[in-house]
Length: 76
Image (cartoon, rainbow, N blue to C red; front, side, top):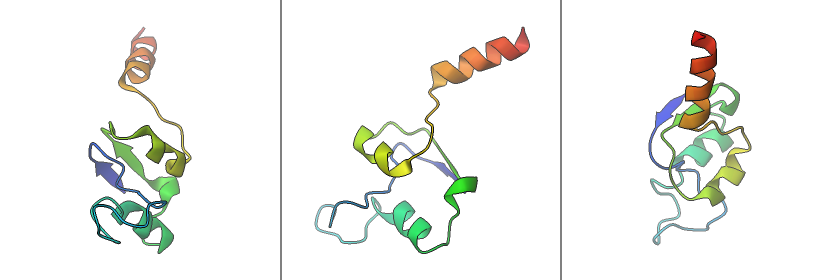
């Protein structure tokens, strides 16, 4: 899955988000837990939300600065 968004939408440790037990803030974690999405073959692009949700992702985070540095080194 490729997910373009500003937020991870993987609030798993909150029992609700603005009163909703399942909401737009929870869908990504539910899909992974239900086996509908393989996190090993998924990526999220554009994330700028709360850094606490990055703990749930348990993956390497590349920033635009790092990607630009890598691209510059590849070109040269």
